[in-house]
Length: 128
Image 1: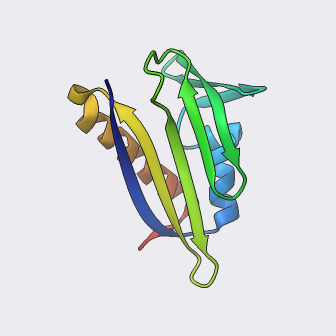
Image 2: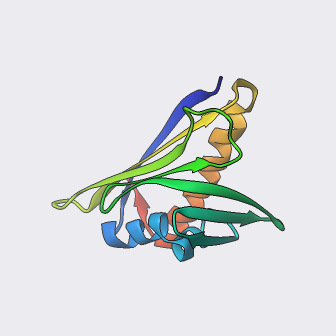
């Protein structure tokens, strides 16, 4: 059984630009994986010459994208990125939800934090 965890950050950035980086193969290739290809609802993520496929489960424009790794036997697990912006302040709340084996929890959180730092740098965003 995997453990669910969430990472939440507040950043000052354009919600439209952030959405592009979270929901398109080209955007995801800039910070999440070395390369991302999509065919229908199957996304293939490449790292260091090997790939992992995920099924797009939810795409709500302006708010959320959720994937399920095809190789993951845990029916309950997925990874998701939710984002909501305050139009008055241009502050966006980005929440990442993922699942990890108990022994891999710290490493999984660290990997997401590194990826999010790459995303923040790419966006030229300010953390709040």
